[in-house]
Image 1: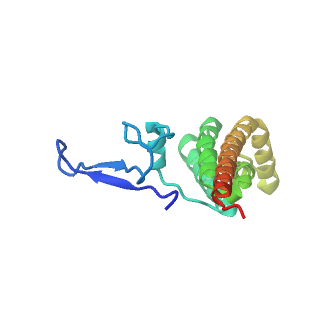
Image 2: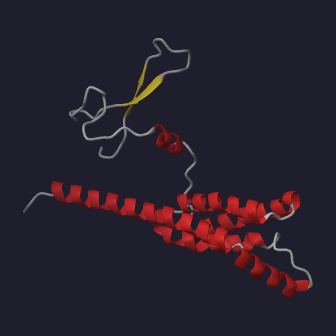
Length: 189
C-alpha cells in the first residue's frame, strides 16, 4: 500500500513499564540504511514531530473566518475587561490567531485565510475601540482604531498569507510528485 506508514512496537528491555518504543518499519524489499530508515529520507526534526502531535482540524473557508472572528471578539472582550482595552496586547494576540487560522483551513480554501483574518481583527476591535454617542460614535471609533493599529492588522494578514502560500506551494509540489509517480508507473501501450 503506497503512502501508508507502518510502525513496529519493540519490547521494553531496559525501559520503565509502559515505555515501549515505536519505530517506523522499513517497507518490505525497500532499501534501508544502517540507521533503519529508508534510503533517500531525511530525518524529521524534533520540533516538526512535536508540531505534528498538535490538533490539526481542517476548517472550511467560512469556518476559518468564523473561528478567527469568534476568537478575536472573545479576546477583545477579555482585553477590555482585564486590561482596559490594551491595543498592544490585542495586536500581539492577533498574530497567533492569524497563524492558527491559516494552519487550520482546508487546502482547498487556503485563499480565504488572508481574507478572513482582517475581518476578524475588525470584529474583535469593536470592544476595545472606545467610542461614545451611539452608533455613529462607535463606528468612528472603530475606523480610527483600525487606522491607528493598521500595523498589527497588516502583520497578522502577512502571517496568514505567508503560511497559506507555503502550504499551497507544498501541496502543489506533492501533487506534482504524485502525478510524476503515476506517469512513471503507467504501462506504455
